[in-house]
Length: 311
Image (tube, helix red, strand yellow):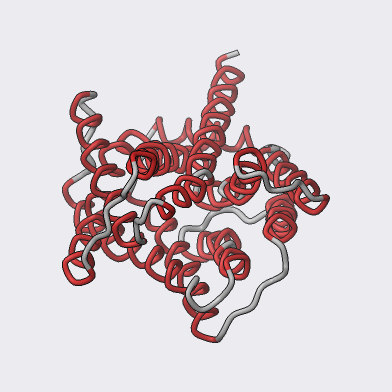
């Protein structure tokens, strides 16, 4: 009976992990809707990202302080700093600059090569398991993203290189994060990374200047991005990452383009297409498939945990 209860506990932790990363994907997915409102009020990309990370970082730091959140080990602080300054800043810099050289759909498709990259990097460098089920789930998720985003698009070599660089940098960012950010320190670690990223955009803003919103709706959109698409999105991603691992977390994150398209249909009046519907079904199906335990997996996890506790 004790063994059965322990296995159930492991399953509950995985369910929580999937739910947390799905919440993160939803929060990231609604960001383009808020960003469009902010851009319409006269905000440029540098100002938007500066506001996002600076406000979000201080807000999450305050929440972590009020909740007495556990701090990450001191030896991980330099790595967390680099994850923000190099990892997340590098990803967003390459992504937004790629949009100047290629269509949004093409850039998005290339960016969502990262679940496959994370799966391969996780297998070779941190020894995450790679089963037939996970490969099928990855194929379904990738196909779903293609259907949701679409195959139409064009761009030059610079745009392609920047988009692929964004995917590679983000993949490395996720792999490293999975090793240094524990589920118990997710909140404080997220605040550290977000504030580190804000430093990069403070420097960029000093050279490029800022363009403040001219309407109240634009200001509210930036605040919404800072809270939902930064505070909630980062914390829930890292909290889920510690429960299900890098490969599965990146797979669940493929919900993001589906959420973006559905929000555009609901709030911007865009039409629902058959390809979007089929793509959404493939993405959701891939998540269900990846969540199914392999034969004997739960028992092995329980035995591994018991051996660790014995040691």
